[in-house]
Image 1: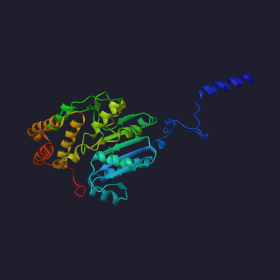
Image 2: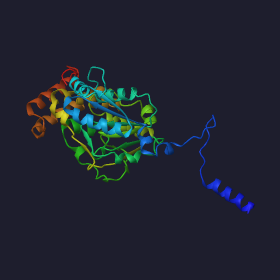
Image 3: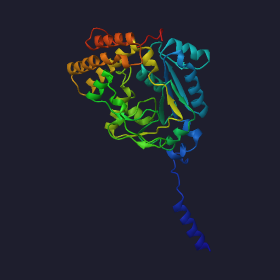
Image 4: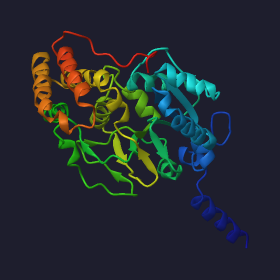
Length: 333
């Protein structure tokens, strides 16, 4: 019987994993064990919500309550005075530099303000609505993996090169002919594809290694650039489309401020082309060609025609160096 008991103990010791001990003798837990509990998982998530206008205040407040109620660290970055005032009136703390930083710089600021230990940086647009947080269960137990997981409803599209950037400026809908992605199932994005960063989780170590979003892109292209850099680093990129649970009111801010925003979009496109290997003169020519093609297509846009036409002329002036690109002013937003 003693021999049998000793054998049983040996079998149990082999079959049950024993956590390693730390230097002080305490038992350490693995990352998967640390985040298997939903409350523990959310305590290691930083949610960053950049916002510009008071028009999205109700949405931002709902998102903040939703994520903070789950136990996440939430940082709201106000890029506009009206947004800041609306949030403060509800006693919601918002970070601000008292100027419109743009999306990339606002997200980077939100990350920089968090000193708590985290596994994930979760970016959420202010015009997103989320029915419940169950889709984010896909992240549980994966905090040690260098991955990006997109949750936005937008289908995957090619990471833009020269042709894709020109087509976007020309308003040629190449991006509309996208892959038929799985719905309600986590899948790996093919090489050369990405999804817009309306709702995206980036493993914290990967985020820090890549240096966050590139602030050279004041409006758009920051997500394509980040995806491109992550792909080059060999990071796994995943997506989970759950349109019944996560919705995004896309394009509202851009249409309402097209005269100011579109020149900034064009400037971002110019910077993107130059960053990824195109010479300055060739990049400017590419942008001008795209803008010229766009002009006869303007009646097809949902933006006001006159404002949109002025936006295109303003974008051309930015490209050729006659004016600087700028975002809506903090005090005006």
